[in-house]
Image 1 (cartoon, one colour):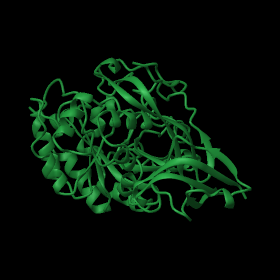
Image 2 (cartoon, helix red, strand yellow):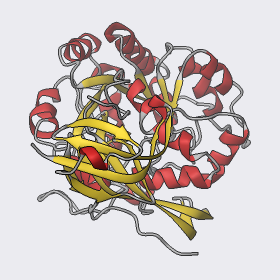
Image 3 (cartoon, helix red, strand yellow):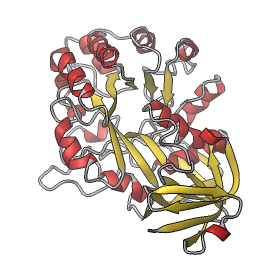
Length: 421
């Protein structure tokens, strides 16, 4: 039997409405006690000094791309983005499809130390570098019945469906693809996660004229309560912010209908757009890092080209380093309270995948998924991928995590470096 005592950290657990200095005792894979001073009952435990640090329920990254090798340069290693970045649970967004889901389970989810789930792609090709080949995402390349069947047969792994709503797709197929994806979500009774923002270019000929500001309301009309609108802070048109720089007038109505909002940080993230959305009174529910091989510098799989001819112009390409915890720092810099940011990556994220009370909280008898972060004060420069810089006085960084009681250092090579102001 292995015991660890996380001593004297600031424990923030929105699900339990707990925020204060506590000890957390872990025995094997289970949280066995939470209290002000557990020294008396933990004489045989390894003591880890967490004074001045944040002790949080295991962080849940709602937007990952970890179908490594199968999605070419796009898919990253699950544990690099997961436990070695201080994250205990990762949700892959649209990597596997109904065709490739068995491979995702066998080669990614099962061997990973990180807890890995998937939002199943609505498209037969999943995330197979399709962002350079839009014809693979036309209506003929969806099989609603097969996707529903695969999702329902794998509910332990599949927690939702992934689809795209953006200008290039609408110019090619109008609303057809979105209607099929929305029906998949209804038939499977799972949330549908919608990518907003520029992804595929408009066709060079034969495309429809698309008014970017009309996409949001067309898509919202097809959705059900609980579906998720992604990339609210995107720097690209066709989403939450209209071409004139104002908040889309239907955003508040979408929220009132029960739709959820996930930041989906990634290369899309813009401090300017975020300011517009937040000042408009819109608060996201969850936060995902959206790291992938186009915006995160890692060695490419052997045998793949170093780049794609169109890569430098692709909207997904970005060179600003970030992580889930780095995205949390950006949320703090935008003025969101720490307690709200923690909820976005714990309790709210667990609700998004229907696992509230099981993940995203610390409770006696519950699984010992715990993330420990450093919480520093100073002055640092943050930059997004459109070049906007802001200065923050608070920096979060991951130190280590426990995944079912097993300790992992936050030593991933992709973690961002702090730049002093």
